[in-house]
Amino acid sequence: MATIKIKQVRSKIKSPRVQKLTLAALGLKKINAVVEHEATPQILGMVDKVKHLVQVIE
Image (cartoon, rainbow, N blue to C red; front, side, top):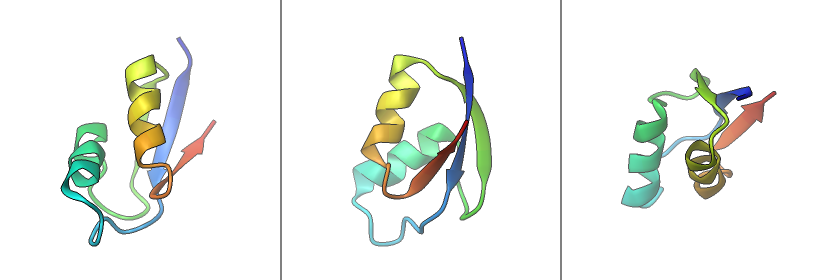
């Protein structure tokens, strides 16, 4: 499987609770934090739900 890097680029302050939990599940806590995950369908689905808050670095 391919590996992707996910970077949080916007704040989660005014986001709905579900999106905050999704960011926590991805392991993102602060702006400019970068995490690395396998590109599974589950991870890609979570990234799609918070695509306005994160940036995918290939």
